[in-house]
Image 1: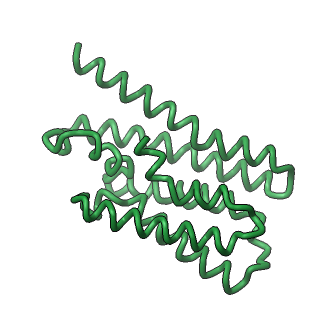
Image 2: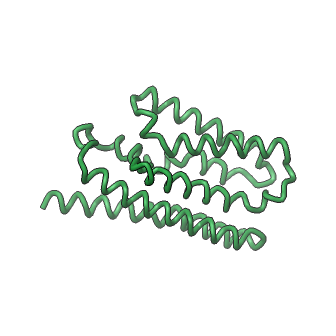
Image 3: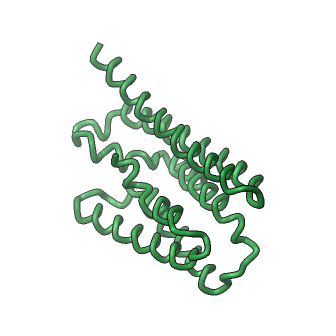
Length: 180
């Protein structure tokens, strides 16, 4: 469930009707900042909040665009841009060897395992799967930008559901192997 909380700003943005995208972007920005403050007060260091910081940066830019040019031609591509931004955040976290999933994983694991090489490796793999899914979602959503909403909803749902299912199954697999 903590994975869903990590994506709360994105979910909030997605459920608000497209016609209200200015307010949706602003609301998502507020949710992202509140989440950063909450996690920081809870003791989670900023380097473990790469997704949250990237999300806040994205929604800062999107909010600025929404209020300065609410009729931008980019509006149709916002779902693709969002998936692309998530992909960039995920790849960036991999490039600096701080996979974005660490922040979520650390909330459910004892501190004693945080520096374990296997813990980092598992999170690198999980983050790579999410990055690939976000990239595929970006491409699919860009291709469907001017088509039916049903196709876009299917692609958006798959871009989150598939890596979420992989994450849960892979973590269970790693835990069962570690016990054996």
